Image 1 (tube, protein in one colour):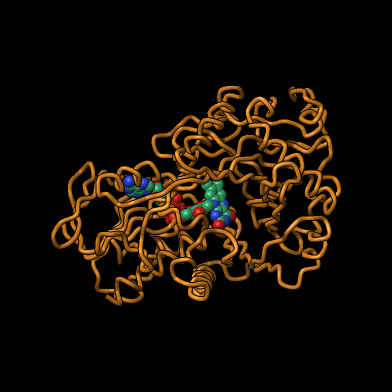
Image 2: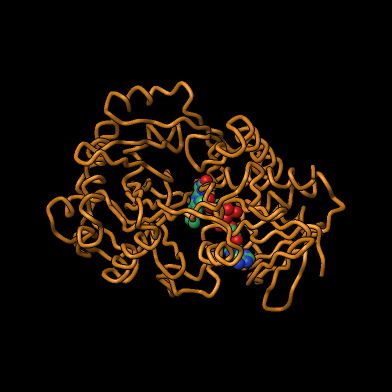
Length: 455
Ligand SMILES: Cc1cc2nc3c(=O)[nH]c(=O)nc-3n(C[C@H](O)[C@H](O)[C@H](O)COP(=O)(O)OP(=O)(O)OC[C@H]3O[C@@H](n4cnc5c(N)ncnc54)[C@H](O)[C@@H]3O)c2cc1C
């Protein structure tokens, strides 16, 4: 079957590419191939009762399906060039911001109206952070929340489903360049198109590597972020989260000069597990609906590891550390901060006696047996630094879940149109290594759709 445009992956990048194609050129014949399920079929079997931990489904409903990795996320759309990707390096800072605002408008139109836009502009916390050797990054953040984010996705699907041909549970196996376009091969057959947009996100990273190898598309890879998810009583961070919702704070360690940063803050949220290619790591989310909120706030503390030649497999390094924690903890491990600094493992009774109730059922253990010393020292230093602006952070009962790994897809070589060395083959979103967030991935989708229709 022949299409004008085939999009591989129905995460935010793919969805916004399809949306914009239909806005600008509704007559185009567009297909979206998605390895995971339709949105209504996406269900993680972990219910905390019968199924307590990841059972390794063939298609992980948290990472795959309509909505991509972001479907059950907290739906925090950060409108900024300061983090979330380097899209601006390809298309310019103003255009990148304009596209993120455009995505925000669509989200509001499709169900997000009434949600709050937080901003660091003029915040007194900037000064407080600087006074304590911490650096608050600039951003506006639209917090949809897991519930509203889902509604927006439902509405976008309703808009698209009669205009675009969706193929769910259909992973694309290979892509071949033809004289006048591309051939996409799936288990049930082959499809051709003139332009192809690849937006396979983090879960498609291994597949993306094979595509780049087969088509000889140059790539580079040198970064992975490793750390823990911190969980503490919501009151400790309430003064920050009430005003900013999410604060991205960066700290440079005294000992090694490494950068440690807060990431993905979830006020009154829950800690969750994440399965990336069979490796269980930790993440977090929160709900806009007060009935679903918890008494805890969680956020990640991550240390960026950049490698230089000859080592190339930064994700492999992160995976090995995550595997070690899976080996010792049978999944995610949890430790009280007090136990960590006293050099002893947390036990079920020490966790039970703590003045905080964990929101994830993780195995009590010892993170110092998992995390490299340099990374652990950085995290401990930052916890004490955060304690200066949010007293209570360095409390003995603060929970640290490990490990949290932020894998970066290898960066694929594309030009300023996000087009690879093959004409009409675009690589966008987190799968390109250029974006690492909902807003940047979505913006990259809108951008390539406009490039295709203008062409
Ligand atoms: C639990 C969680 C919470 C998060 N919270 C936030 C947040 O609050 N804010 C934020 O900015 N970011 C958040 N993120 C990150 C965010 O979800 C991603 O940056 C974003 O989804 C990237 O969009 P994407 O379209 O590039 O890729 P993805 O969303 O990963 O979508 C890619 C899609 O491609 C499909 N695919 C892969 N390989 C193939 C193939 N071979 N054939 C067909 N389909 C394929 C996958 O199944 C997937 O559905 C979170 C991520 C997780 C996991």
